[in-house]
Figure: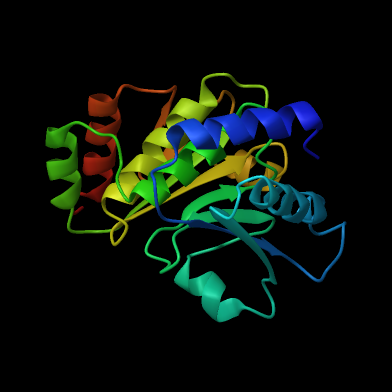
Length: 222
């Protein structure tokens, strides 16, 4: 899935941005039910394997059938397939992509890998403090399409929030066209659309402070 030019660009990106030490895990989940139930399961697996192959040992790829590895899926809070999870060797983090992370979203995968290996999110100190103070779970769904240039920023914001407080914040990208029933459920008319705890919904790649306000609001007791 990655041509020679893509592989060369990824190699240069990793050489420039990866910390000196550490690794990341790309964990993909598919299903045994076949193409009708999981159209891009094979492609998600292949993309992870090809990305790992050009990482010079900094990224590993593994694939699981969700029916056979329910314990791992539950630990990472994987709810549907195909799924790609960017994690660390100890599974502290679970930055999720539902659907094929192609188009503009592929950049978000690369940046997530860098952040996971670094073990830190690039956020303002006040944002980090607020995120650490969240005492109840936040489930952030970011609905995207591959051709949306603004969507990766929203995905990355959600994933950075999760990286900052993985115990309470669960963040995932959802490719709208691959999950039309889910997109219909949340009336996704424009992307990126963000849904937090099924309580707060907003559109657009909001700045860090405004995004934080929405997440905090969604975690307040009713």
